[in-house]
Image (cartoon, rainbow, N blue to C red):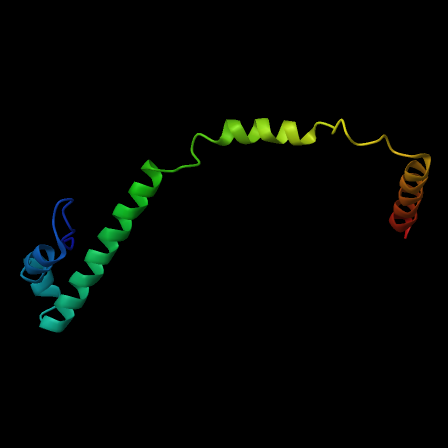
Length: 106
């Protein structure tokens, strides 16, 4: 039989009172301390599950995916204030490509 789970509107004390006298708990955990421990674990598990559901419902980033894509394209656009690359920069790029070719040949 399944262990009791907290109800949505149930406080901790009410759940613990109901849980420790539950027939399944009483049968599987006859020691009162064990029953209380398993009920505490069930309460925490229920609270964690409720938190996860709330997090999914209230995800502040859920609608931001489209905004992120727009920001990425804006970030990729060249800055008008930046000067064009100099000839030295282009030569450095060619040297880097030659080094990569040599590394690949190994």
